[in-house]
Length: 309
Image (cartoon, rainbow, N blue to C red; front, side, top):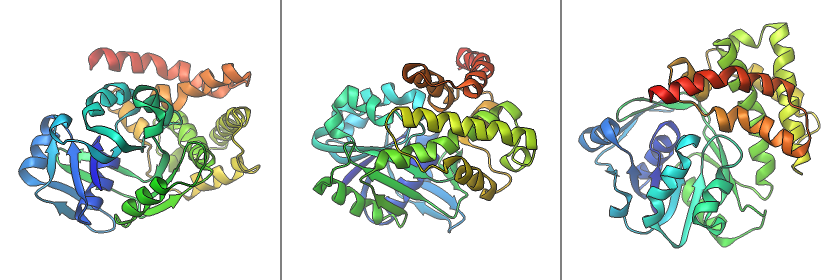
């Protein structure tokens, strides 16, 4: 497959690097110093599973130069979605498939509303990685897993083909006929730790051991799960306990990407990671007091960051 990586940061850069290293035809869409570093030195990946460099690496800030592609791995920050979709329109052909590996639960809907939902598979990924410096990706988790499925849960040839291509990366690839359950199961975890991590400015190992904070964490998980249920997504009845156990299993120094952005004074994914729960809660008539509070307390800082950006 001819593949474009839209958003060559921690997630897109890592998976794109693996695919390029496996011999796939990969072009990274990047800009600024990151693009210059990739062109000059290749894409360098520092991974717990072994360091590697993709050199030379095809990279551009003009997607129209790539031509029509078979697959777009869409891995920008959620607040960049609409701008990024406009950029990739020239590379989308009749049969192009877009796989969003963004945070949140509405990526497929947002992208599909602009280019046609027929082009989009729904997906989620479990990985701990980040852009450390221009041209350098850090990968810190021994796991790297992607679940991907048709939006309606159907079994299709293109889903099989995309999964077979992604498997060449060496990552764990799971074709799913219940992809929304996978997306929301991850989201109840990442949304809760993003909210609590940003409020406490503490690593996961520091706030998960505080009894009062564990109560808030569990409540945030329960609220998000209740919103999912109201939307018709069936999660495991023990989702609060299993998510708390997963929180306890994470490395103690772990911080979600949204928290790292907030602590650095950067624009964050607040709307897609926290704010979406109160918004959907109101639409579904589900009370979300913990996430309401988290969103209200984090919103002023996000507005300040946007003014500085």
